[in-house]
Image (cartoon, rainbow, N blue to C red; front, side, top):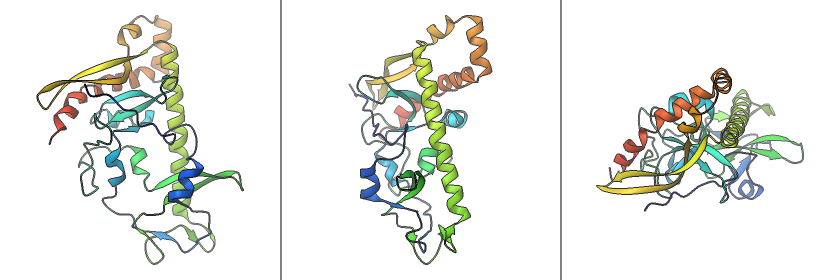
Length: 255
């Protein structure tokens, strides 16, 4: 049996990156190096090759459901927190959509969590405000060409756009997690083993949470109407549609 391994590391949702990660591998774009620039690389998703799941915000469901299974996984052993993710592999450190050259599978939606690379949102404890960080080892960092982070000592329009996009993503992921937990509290999520044919053999993937459609059918008209008006039913339908991608994902194993 293939055991599902949760890759939650404290960075996906629910707060800014850890102080340890920031110190070890990231540069704060706080103006301390105003000459720093970046030239984004075309194929820079190598970091994602070891991620078999990525967090997904509600606003991404419509696009993501066409290509990936959208499921829910536990953020801790007790499953006290669940989060919405796109599933990209069945084993630890397996992403079936990122190639060896760092390119993403063509014509496939790239989750916002991957698109934001090499940037992350951190916290400036001195100024008590968010600050954008960039991966220190990113090959496109330089002081000669590319997009400037600072212009005449002030944050550039590019940096301001980055900060807004990262903050928006952070908030959307938090809101999505809150929505998932409301579904769990209503008894609308259940954990199940997913049986798939992989390399000609039947395998069982454990630890995947999905909507309990039988429980959903038991809700009264008033609750269903409320879920229709707040968009929950549309999201649930997109989740249901996405589950057909489990078999397609299994077919990618060994390609």
